Image 1 (tube, rainbow, N blue to C red):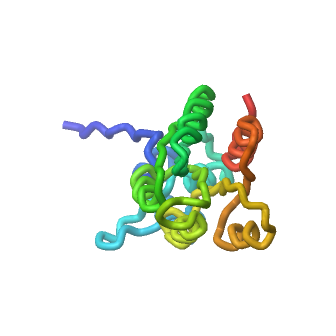
Image 2 (cartoon, rainbow, N blue to C red):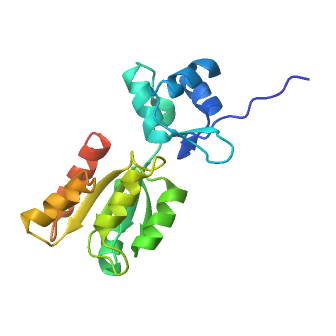
Length: 199
């Protein structure tokens, strides 16, 4: 009896090489070769050595090689990190109205780390002044980890000192938005970071 191949969930955050091969309509050997040559960014699991490919990396590989990306056009994942619950609610309500994002929130740097590993967001909106760990340190940890360094990080803060803002970029921040900000400005920057067309 022929074994039925299980369909791949395109909204997953991480793919195996076999799942990537199905999505790209390529052989498993081709995907493994591309992974091992660094053409597909990813990482190996510590104990098993299994290759894992983040969704954003697979999407980039598909774009670079002219492979149709419709199968991966799921909602973009955004993690909102801020200890201001009111602001978190405002941002969540605003971005949910767009209908293009899957959202999670965290109020501390510790929680942000846990959620990042489990949720594998495409982008993190990161407040710099957190109650436990400085947001700059959170960003450094994300960017120094092979499994999360591809995630885009937009820092949000009220500070205006150029030296401190420069320190954020040195820590790996991809963009900076100063508080207070207009929601449309935030949405525009998020779209740029995720390479999404305005709707």
